[in-house]
Picture 1: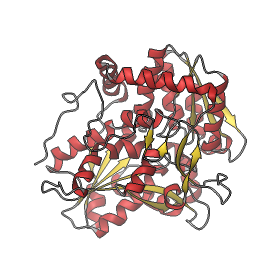
Picture 2 (picture 1 turned 90 degrees about the vertical axis):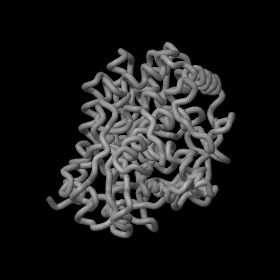
Picture 3 (picture 1 turned 45 degrees about the vertical axis):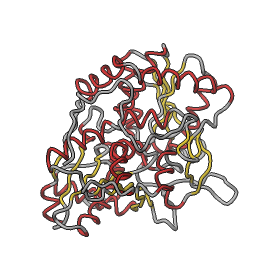
Picture 4 (picture 1 turned 30 degrees about the vertical axis):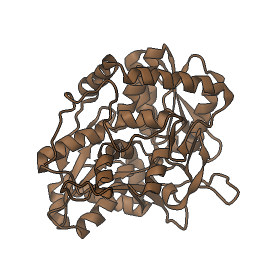
Length: 426
């Protein structure tokens, strides 16, 4: 029998995430061959200072106490784990549970990481905050915590994303942030990230860059993962209480990969124990990450782990969509949050190790799944989440009724209504 441990009683000032068998990254910031610090000379000191500050914060019980206090009393955690009764009954297969990150303040998982990083910025005395955003949820989360702490906030966002995520642009501005449009390249998340990095290179002394996903130079992939791992830790405790055992399948969407790694990381040791033969009688746990297949894997898509190969982008080695000459290909997804040609280095490593299964869903499949979830459970999820919902539906129909699936509902779909209405006949 697996024991459940309260998050409050397991609060550890040494490390927010407890794992024995899986302790990536290494001292140089690498997950296997992935990760590292591929940055301009002007940012080497920033990287070193940030790593030193986070190393100190990991030892500081007050830091983690402040972090969890804000998650509870400002963000609204823990988020519920909801049994999807009607969807389960309709599909006639595995029991489906929904981890409701859409119920966080600001409507997505992004606020978890923004809270952690703004606390670090405050410790370092940085008063000017920059961020990049695609779907706008990270931009909104960053603008929110900057308003809370009284900090200057500048958010870089591609012009295409600004057009399709207009409500989030308005929310950022209402919160006091300056939203800087990016009109070069694909005019989406990749180019917004590049502009944010250029800003940081120009203003290294007074600026803190709050990266929204598990990408970028070390220590960002590790740090963002640690802040987001509250998702998986809560899910583990809640599911043990509901079912008395671990789930059979856990599914999350993957763009840069923060909601997925936040869900998966606290379960990696269970997967490792199974693969090493130390199962202690438990069933095998499968972790599935779902990328955006866009118009199809032979057309325009953002399925980096499915169709990409290793390369360097935005300060780290990772799987990338690139042509034969190593030039970055344009990514495409109906979902702005998955429209990125790279993926976090830890996801890249987990793919190579075979510890997580990575698959994809098309635009049309995601739209159909979004509508299906809305009309069976009364939950309008984000288009990002809908990719995971599609795969969950396929898995549920294939599995038996004694088996269980958890979907990480990474965000709500308010921001996507204009796009949804263009493609779905209501």
